[in-house]
Image 1: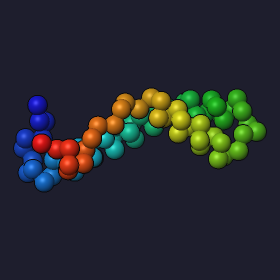
Image 2 (image 1 turned 180 degrees about the vertical axis):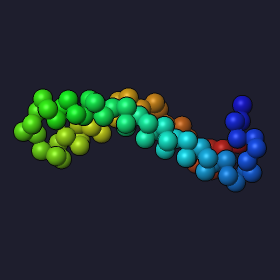
Image 3 (image 1 turned 135 degrees about the vertical axis):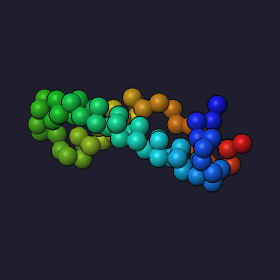
Image 4 (image 1 turned 90 degrees about the vertical axis):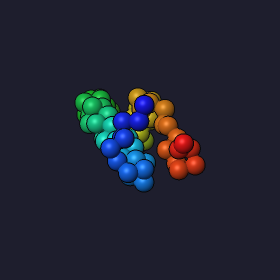
Length: 74
């Protein structure tokens, strides 16, 4: 099923990228309370370590990335 049937073929890959970016942004906002609690629970951690922990948490909750390169498209 191609949900982008109304777009020109050249724009479909771009739309997939935009959808993936929007989904990632929504997930990042959803995980904000976890980051806030981590900062309160561990006030002595550096900003670099807090960011690394946030990225690990984000990667754990993110679904597997699909192949969206032009080589993979039908």
